[in-house]
Image (cartoon, rainbow, N blue to C red; front, top):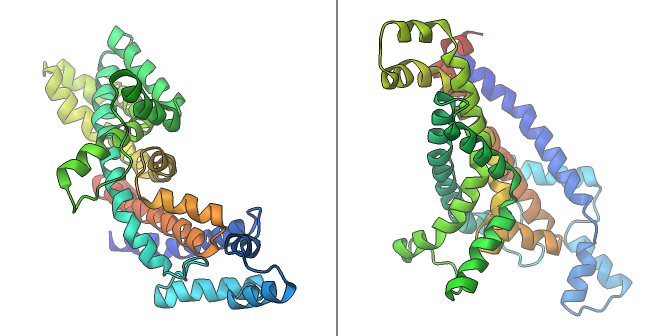
Amino acid sequence: MLRYLVRRLVALVPTFLLASVIVFSAIRLIPGDTIDMMMSQNDISASVKTREDLIKALGLDQPVLVQYWHWISSIVLHGDFGRSLWTGESVTSLVAERIPTTLYLGVLAMIFALLIALPVGIISAIRQNKPVDYLGRVFAITALSVPPFWLGTLVVILPAILWGIAPTTQYVGLTDDPLLSLRQMVPPAIVLGIALSGVTMRMTRTMVLEVMRQDYVRTAWSKGLDERTVVLRHVLKNALLPVITIVGLQLPLLIGGAVVIEQIFVISGMGQLLLMAVSQRDYPVITGIFLLVGVGVMTINLLVDISYALLDPKIRQG
């Protein structure tokens, strides 16, 4: 197991470097110029000298490779993601202020997704080609097809139209009022959870059906074991292994959904910070957020691989 873990950790190094190169390069391709935006927003005289002074002060006059080296070396050696071009605040502090809210939303959304997807997928497989199976499959396809922003907009607008309930205009932090914060977070978490549940539900159904066709499951049925015992002891134990991988791989979808959902429900999280940074062409904040998300995805995938290896000895021996 130790050798397997070392191999996976070593493989993360080139993955991290490649992700950093892609993030750093892609951000530079965003249309628009940070300097022009800063000068127009702050009513700075648009003289050539002023522009050159700003470029030099922000380090944007250096070659791209030099900028990349300074950026990545600061991150690796000092954990410094740079400072916002607009506010001068540390990217680390900006992210640290917002990330707990996004994690809170993400955890709740994933809990709702699993509470929906696992029971529906299992029941749909056990009752294959029955009405409940058709309903489950329709739900999964609907969850995959309906955009989270559309469903989120309905959740915000319909109560106001039908019952005169005004949408929340200010998010209350978990530490300020836990109960009110939970009440505010449940609707966006359900919306995001529904979007995440479609893939997990379909994978759960597929794997349960596949395992139920195995010889050892047929043997269990032939011994006269009841359905609950067969499903819980023999089917789910092996069917849910690939589902763990799917859940881990949905982190990018979770982050992408959070960007939109946080805007709709006025939640001060990472998604809102990212949209603001993109609109201002704030390169350090954008690259910092994307790289942290990349590291998060790699970490989750590593944990998924480790859990997979612990549950299936063939993986760690391969």
